[in-house]
Length: 77
Image 1 (tube, one colour):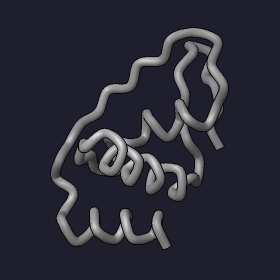
Image 2: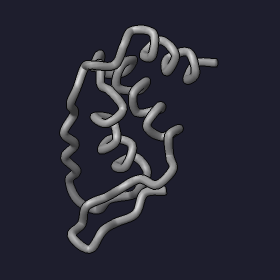
Image 3: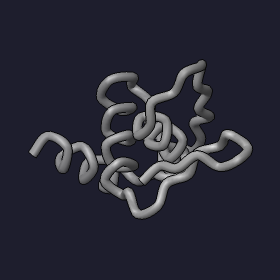
Image 4: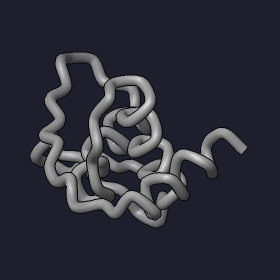
């Protein structure tokens, strides 16, 4: 569940499905290969309605091809 911290930051608690969806969405929709830690900001941003602009910093391409394929397969199946 995404929650808003007093500083306006967001964090996820137990939402691996959201991170998996963010990884797959970034790969399929934006042609970006992002590992789990890099996709967390996108997952948090998609999990809550925001009134203003949202900035997500995407990092890492150190997800293995087999893990990426697993995430893409899980989304389509």
